[in-house]
Amino acid sequence: MAENVIAVENINKSFGSVRAVRDLSFEVRANTCFGFLGPNGAGKTTMMKMLYGRCTRDRKSPGRMDIFGYDPMRNELAIKYLSGVVPQENNLDEELNVIQNLMIYARFYQMPLKAARERIAQLLDFLELSEKARSKIRELSGGMKRRLVIARALLNNPRLLILDEPTTGLDPQVRHLIWDKLRQLKKQGTTVLLTTHYMDEAFQICDVVLIMHKGRKVLQDNPRNLLEKNTEEYVLELFDPDSVKSLSGHNLLEHVRMDSSQEIARLYSDNVEHLKTLAAALEGGHFFLRQANLEDVFLRATGRALNDKQ
Amino acid sequence: MTSSKPRIYPPLYQRLYSVWYRHMRVYTKNLFSNGLPPFLEPIIFLAGVGLGLGKYITESMEGLRYIEFLGMGLMVTTAMFTSAFECSFGTFVRLEFQKVYDGMLAAPVTVNNLIIGEMIWAGTKGLFFSFSVLCILSAFGIVSLPRGLLAPLVGFITAVMFSSLSLLVTSFVKNINHFNFYFTGFISPMFFFSGVVFPVSNLPPYVRPVAEFVPLTHAVRLVRAVCTGGYRGHLLLDVLYIAAFTVVVGWFAIKRLRKRLVS
Image (cartoon, rainbow over all chains, first blue to last red; front, side, top):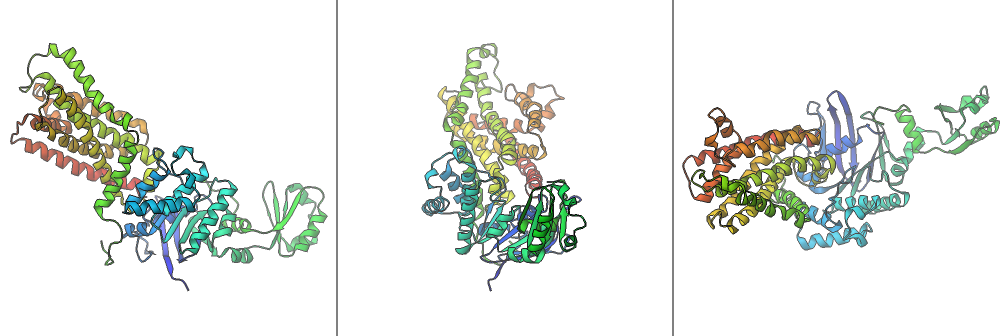
């Protein structure tokens, strides 16, 4: 079995009276992709920042953190040297062009000039940005900027790549491209750690998903197991809540789990025939019968109510 | 270092250099618009004095012609202004709007490295701005070379001193417009009351201690001594003041900015 790259035990983090991370423990194996999934304000970013010293864990609690054998409180520099970080917001230097943006970061890793140039050419090629090498930052699209920030994080051949919402706000093509690149990196031996609130992203690229809610770990498993263990196999979605009433008293209702909000009702069951029968019994209203996905697990695990950060 | 493992990340000088290099690259990207005004400003100032104001001021100040007296002072005020702007508005924009530090602090650099690199960069700008004034002054024969070549070094330490103060101010500022208070309330008055435009000795006795308390006065005294070769024992006190001010205020600035950068 592969070794653990990250081991976190019982970590807490408070901002004043707000407990952003509560008693969180997890381990990340080398060459895997580990995803934090949770609504805004769940503590995902805070947890990631604690790993590379941008955020300090509560000292009062007895927790432990080990990243490549280093504790971020003591050896943040060693961890930063071995890791690449893609922050939530792109922060490129608008005054400089694409290559120059990367060249200034090569200094931080004390890369010799020639090696830096070669590495940059290689990374621009890898992220399909070679044509834009001399472009100004404001000439880049959102997806290109994001890829450039990823290239910057990869400069020093990091063993660990940390990405905070890598594909938020990007179009489907770019998202798939980034996912492909992350899969390739994993194959090449990079451990990937990311936060996301996209279920499909977690499902596509993560080997392990940790669902966080209000600073706590709610579930952790590989995406397929999460699906199998935590939700029924099929969902019947009813887009007209009034049509649900027409089902009242139906004997099959006892065998399905119902979860309804104002605009939509969802009936969950492992037996697709039950749902089909119910759908047939509906009097009007649109419905959609589908397989359950990670979103259903997520909504079930984190609850439907919005918190004040969403 | 508490770990027994060998150091794998770049040494301190490289980390400071990287921060400095980033700022230098971004600044020199617009070399023309950033690099020309420092040369024009002293020309305008000296023209104003030489063509107009100067003929009303016939009295010598501290044994110097007025144009010499003022010109030497300008070599440190220009360093003060550039450093104060760089480490207030400049730092704030990098911190809050551009999120530049988010990227830099993900590289192997600590908050201390980042802030000290920032101060060295401000010092470098001060050095350059002082040097531009020196070029103009020496071209008009107001300051003689090679003696005056030490003046940009005074510009450097002046700028570092004001970077520490400006960073401390920045650590308190939540709204970028609040810097106006710093400039109107502190930086601009210093220009007039620190012995740049007239000798501190002409101030009423009850104001003089204030002039001795503020940082610019000491930098002005130092730069005039350097330019005239008039070294005296009490200059040591000015040097000590500048060193102590930079270290103490810089320490508080780092301590406070750390809270803002590492939550």
